[in-house]
Length: 110
Image (cartoon, rainbow, N blue to C red):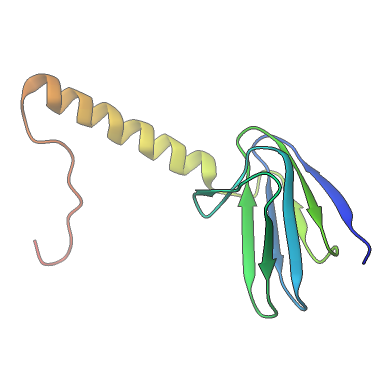
C-alpha cells in the first residue's frame, strides 16, 4: 500500500469525503477530530461514506493511505469557536469574582 505524508500548518484543517477505506496516522504535532485529540502513532480508519475533519492549532504531520482529501487554509470556523470560548470564559470569571450567575444557554422553552 502506498502512503502519503501530509503536513498541516497551524490553523489549518484536513477534510475529506471517504470513497474507500482510509487510514490516517498522526506522526508528529498535535491535532484533533471534532474536538478529540489524536494520539501519535495510532491508526484511525474511516470507511466509505464517512466524512472527516482534522484540525490543528499547532501544526502536525499526518500519514494517509491515499489522497482523497483537501487542506482548507482559512476556510474553517475554528477561530470563531475559540473567540466564543474566550468570551464565555471571561464572563464566567467575572461572575465568579462578583459571586453572580455566569452565562447560560437559553432554549426556546426558557
